[in-house]
Image 1 (cartoon, rainbow, N blue to C red):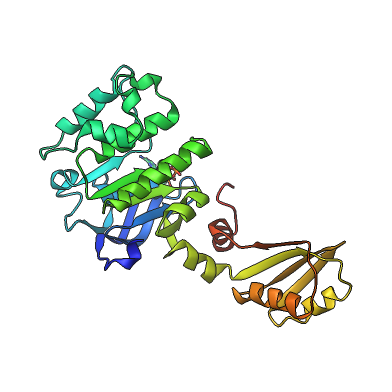
Image 2 (image 1 turned 90 degrees about the vertical axis):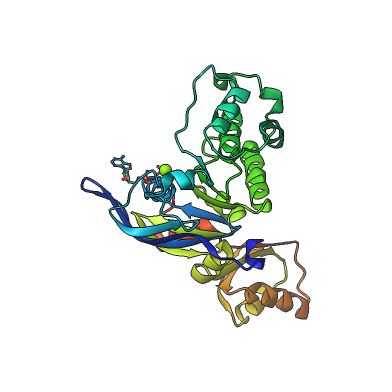
Length: 311
Ligand SMILES: Nc1ncnc2c1ncn2[C@@H]1O[C@H](COP(=O)(O)OP(=O)(O)OP(=O)(O)O)[C@@H](O)[C@H]1O
Ligand SMILES: [Mg+2]
């Protein structure tokens, strides 16, 4: 994991704002992305993710605020920067009849510096069998993998991935996550956007939650959950008559709901589970089922914004 390294920021964004006419797409956005981490910008449709990312890539110019990427000003030094970053755009398309290997060759030719071995890249991304296939004959997942390959062709130090798994099935999505972890393992920094909370939770070292163009909070997924959703729930089955009373006596327990033989025990903090287990063993309460419900990033989002990310 990146936080084991001595990390320094490769991206610094400070107080940027971007408007389109009367729409304020991004407002007072500040964050840093550290060397070697997978950083995710997460938020619902229209939150300002792509706008923010495109400002960082130097494709758009913020109305105000400052951005530094690898020590460069992305807007003024965009050509210098392009040599050192890889970009996968949200709405990318290629000519229908361009072949996979041709696309890779074409992309490689766009850079002054020597590119990585295209054949090897296709192999790493599971596309070697498709090297002679036309773009239009690739599946959605294969197209996404090709776009990731194109973003990696110049051996970039920072890779930008905008909504990389949108529209893919769970299996293809997992394969892409593995690819992205592989990019991090090769020492690169990944900056991605997603509106899939599960993706952010499983893939990102740190995430920034953005809504209506503003960042609400930034941290590791675990710390965000611990900070905003400290409640824990244990659900268990027992036919022990004394159980309910015992559960209510546990100090951290806030509520015990019973339905037939099933008990739902709620309380705050990580110790709740240990205390429930302790109570069971101390009172020799026999259980036939036991599980925990641990909040996720989805719950954090709900708590912070008052609505689900899909609303
Ligand atoms: N070129 C543009 N002209 C006018 N308005 C725009 C433009 N691009 C984006 N917007 C608006 O700015 C806001 C932020 O859009 P943006 O594309 O950054 O959101 P997003 O978080 O990437 O959304 P999604 O999850 O749908 O990709 C939206 O209200 C959008 O309608
Ligand atoms: Mg977007």
